[in-house]
Length: 174
Image (cartoon, rainbow, N blue to C red; front, side, top):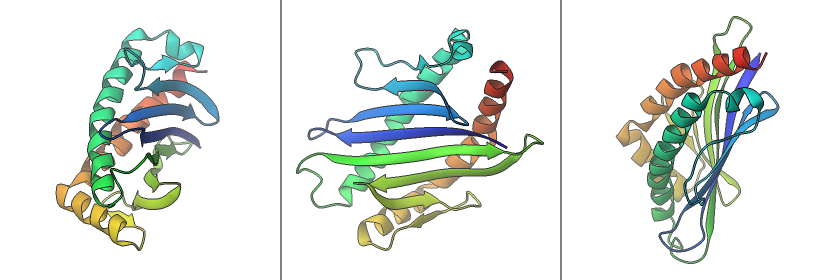
């Protein structure tokens, strides 16, 4: 089996300021990074086959900028559930990705979030809904995300785009 994983750290070093850093891995090899704090945020290749495909890097940069916008919504949804949101810096960590089997079919997709280093909310195994930690803030976030149909977007990404990108990277990285 093979995996494509994205590790994202988002934090607000000041009120209404937000910074994202992303690293992407195929299996145990880092393939890309992204830092929203750069003057002109772009996906940076970390392996040669990524550097040889500028069109795909541009596609990933556009995707990264969309994730940044969506991530801001996710982050403020979480922060708005916490009364201390305006006091100090707060951190959210995401892990999202997909695993495929030898037949190149999806084995599992995942999207998990931690708030301040603690588990917070995750997409269920069937990719249709959310499971949240047993606290008021996480449950509020779950209710908002369930109402918005947010899981459908993630299911589509994990079953489609994630698998397609992983297969592309495995082919290019041979």
